[in-house]
Image: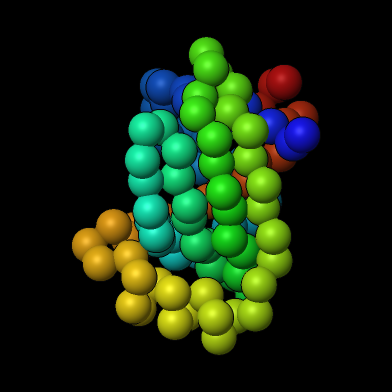
Length: 100
């Protein structure tokens, strides 16, 4: 079973921005949520996915994610997510440049 490991970091300054090598725009929508489980649709760049996530135990939860047609994802975001949508940019930084 595939697992998602949730990690969050507190950023102390904006110095990391100098090491960004890639950025992708993400649109997320929550279709359903119940008892710690959820179904999410996402458009990240030119790829659309739907994910089914189980209950979280510690920092880990089971997650099944599947690529779907872009037109289906657009329709789900428009008709099924109500006010449970967000847009964000995911940036990737050069780990060597950050001193990792």
